[in-house]
Length: 387
Image: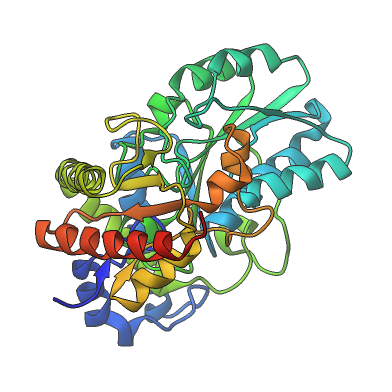
């Protein structure tokens, strides 16, 4: 058996069919979309094809919005938050987010505060879950935007945001949803979410890195973050990442037909992995929600007392197993455990937490072999730890 990759929640590989389709047309993906000749027209048509495939994924065929391609999910979050608030600040200067959002949203919110906006940050419970009633209580006449993630990469919780979106819609407040972690594990529907802005990261559902997606409803006005070209209706200047955009379109098309099966198979692999770890390693604690629909289908965050996570990750790597110490957007530094601290965990508990992500194709044999490596690592590290 070769190396075992259980870091799919952080950086999943592209779907094999996507790779195959892009490889077949790679030599043709070079003309600029702005030209008047036939080659440029073909590029424009390809970009629009990809746009429609992704819209179909998140709107179930309904109309009433558009997609903006960016360079990453993080950039799309920045454009959604900063671009909206700067364009609409005359209507109000109050924003609501949570304490556990993606760093791109958190740092953009700090920038808004420097520009005179007021930002309220709601807390979470010990499972990392939001209290929707706290969001309702913070809404006021000056509130122009609420920005919340649908799922969290550290603790694995999936949030039900429909009621928040419905209340925001009734009050005329724009609702920004970060769907970058939920793709592939939850059915994303902008109508059900009542989302005016929705951020996707195609690399999370079978596409390539280097492209992000921002959905906006037709009534949602944005201001660009920078200037220099008229691409994406003037909101994202610069030559389009044609390879990444087409890969995103193919990935979305495949996901439409495979999503239910992927969720079922990933959930089964996730449950099998945790159950075997509990049988072989003690004590061990699952962080975040219990197994089920309130948890990402491919995600586990487990705390192993007496075992420093970084040491276990390095031990596993040397023996052919790839896992991580967290959700992937930050290394395990002094500020990187902000999600766990917000959920009531100590920094020490965060240092003893590992994160694992399965795939639909993760096999029983891979899970057994992975747990054997983890057991050996836990025993080795505990034997070397004083006391």
